[in-house]
Amino acid sequence: MKRIVTIQDISCVGKCSLTVALPIISAMGVEAAIIPTAVLSTHTMFPEFTVKDLTSEIKPITAHWKRAGFGFDGIYTGYLGSFEQIDLMKELFADFKTEDNIILVDPAMADNGKLYPAFDEAYAKYMATLCAKADMIVPNVTEACFMLGAEYKESYDEAYIKELLGGLSALGARYAVLTGVGFKEGKTGVMGYDKVNDEYFYFEQDKLPCAYHGTGDIFSSTCMGAMTLGLDWKKALTVAAKYTAECIRITFETPGSNTYGVDFERAVPYLLELLK
Ligand code: PXL
Image (tube, rainbow, N blue to C red; front, side, top):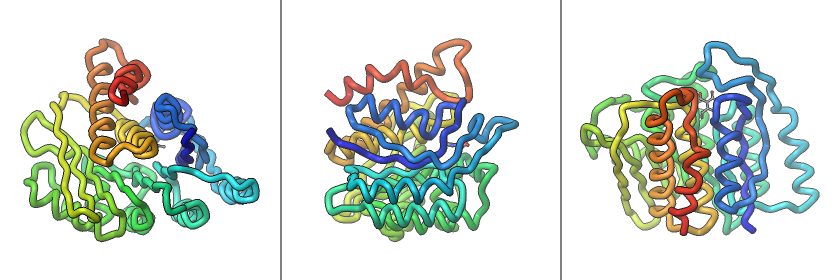
């Protein structure tokens, strides 16, 4: 069985980071080892939340894993909390990267033109140095702009997106992927660039008139699972985008659904269909 390790926070209520990565990756038939970087009562989009930082546990955990000889087919980082945690992830990559495994970095830290409450521009620039060490990176347009110091635009053309992809790709990862990319009214999608084959890929879907937190984490978790299962990168992006869209659709169409995260649980059968 394939095994990945994912390193991000646990937001106890909120359906993001580890509480979506674990169930999704497990449902895909991939073992998910975790390192929780912090425990929060909810994600940081709630008006109030508690945080217990777990940075001091990271090194002891990875040191034990090294002694035990554990290896991983995938390494996936999401929301992190500090410069120190970014540095620890660089060490973890150096310790557990092999020729065959894949490192996916989701620089989860911003959306809709704004950084999340816990972060500033210096953090975003530092996150770019972690992206440099990945095989695949999956920022949204906001995160890409903060990392590259580029102007954030709400409406744009393909040239703008390709320029951002060029900047991201120059950081180092083979696959640079931008999520939430729409060129037409009512459409959204994902666009990626594979620098080894000098190839772009765009997959577009209908955009629903709603937005939820945690959808980026659903996309990256699915993408990590699919890449680990050996799907071609374009197929992995397509599966991840379709599943994310279905989670959003199910949530949007159910009166009374929570707004803090999507009902990804109810779309798991659809995800498994996509993998057949
Ligand atoms: O990637 C979403 C996310 C994860 N973890 C925490 C968050 C958020 C988004 O706000 O606050 C703690």
